[in-house]
Image: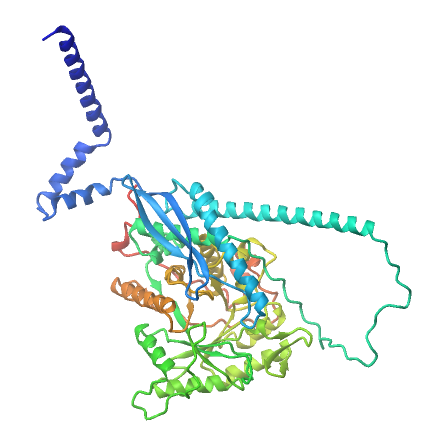
Length: 613
């Protein structure tokens, strides 16, 4: 062999020996030989049928935790055909990019059903533009900002999302300020070029003599201005929820358990309760020839002692008006149309009519209201106020003052004691009447505020926003709401012994994450609408599946339906700002100073929930 060829061979051998030393050092640093020996020793006695599968399972627990590598936002349609946002999460798992999950946000609109066509058209355009902006945020800014983060680090992700949203709000304020300044300059320039017209004294336009001017009989608190929604804000809520789902997926636990562990530490969690469904059965029309305007929804609530499977089938039967060998007739044929809430539409002439109808239907299928089923009413009183008269129009042409409304509800509950919840019985501005109705009826039924709790992020960040005295609130996961916001607000409400209800927005999607959120957060009720349309029934089916899973694991605890007897003496209005920090126990009335429900630790089968690293 020539000398040059011998030298090349020696160099190749030295490089090979050097690579072997590096490889040996590399694998020893990562303890590969030791773990390989442990795996082989552990698996040989078992002699598994799929040896390489078991080896893969053994070594997978030493792999790095998945991290977010990509976010994908796209425009999709919700259950009513309106545009909404879908967010997909991709993670790097064992060195490969993998799609983990997606979530579809439910659209939400504050436009009333009887709005003018121009208002509806403007709302649809704004919603479409908002979704387009949200898709842009997800695919560009948020995609870069969240890359490399663990999907299990919900607090860090939500902090970044919150800071990004705050930045966008400030940018919008700057743009609005600049536009206002430009408009003022243009107005000044126009007025300086236009000669001012001097008005002659005594020529002011006045009301014609003898003409009546509508004046409120008694001043009422004005309606609070509608909260503006930042265009694109749904990207924040969609991304936060998608990351929570991804965190549950990589931890290999259900989303509801992941949410519960984010809210409570593992040592303090043992049993979980299911939220009772408020199933909408009737939607009372507010147009002619129907006279009743006060009742928007009539809902059935099953008792806590039953499995949800039985009352769900009973509610379905009551919706269809089936008579089970009773010989009684089904409801009239007028109840055939289905509303956007997924329930039957009917027109009524008085407040008692829908309740008597519910009694008849339940009796026809062998149910007794107050024992086998209970009733909740969504009054939606904020939609009924006539601001010229300063009164609520509860029937066509029949008006009641805020004080008279309290008497109406007291009489209603006394006559129909199977009603255990009233949602929005008054406007959020009528705080004194909220206090009055709580003192009068708080020990008999739940007085729930929904309209006052529309914007969850405002409930915890802006201390000027408050809720009237009530038994609890309806929370909706919309717009810029984050999972951390829900966890914090429900924790504050639990500390004040308020009940939490998770409500479904108007524009439904087939995403059933809302049910997992309700279970994980420990909500008392969940308000999903009627048992109609796939996107709603999917959520009811998810609730049944969770009940079955918890019962199988023996971690299902019976819900508690005790009411709060509010103190009769005058109390200051209860604000969520009063919850930060929680008041001392001795400063609360006796009925509110009871300790919260005790939560225990999980059983052994849930001991290892997180990633080993």
